[in-house]
Image 1 (cartoon, rainbow, N blue to C red):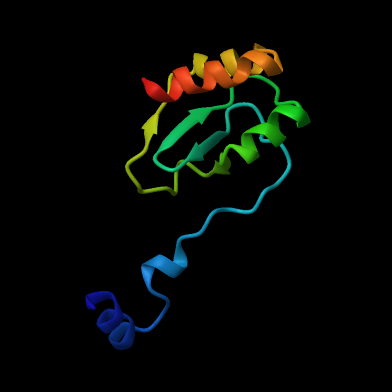
Image 2 (tube, rainbow, N blue to C red; image 1 turned 180 degrees about the horizontal axis):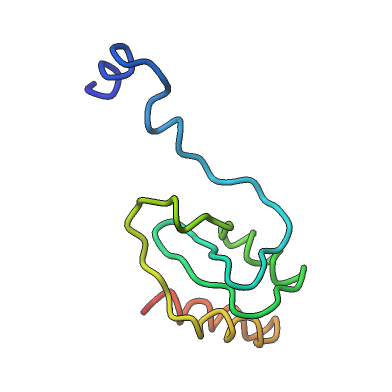
Length: 101
């Protein structure tokens, strides 16, 4: 109710409509950040197209960490290296282990 009133008075779109998942793009560069919900990790190794496609299917997107004011839990820098070095069969188990911490 308050959001609707605020939108009528100040104009613009409600916060729920402004927030959306970023578009899928090319694989991110080293030292970029990717995020899923309230969790972010730093890209510390080259990203193959196959790994990037898998991360996209899991819901990860590249974000601009400097302009993002949300409270985000940053994973350790070694996490991405673990995922990048894992083969396809082991990646799911490593991924679940990482997010459960």
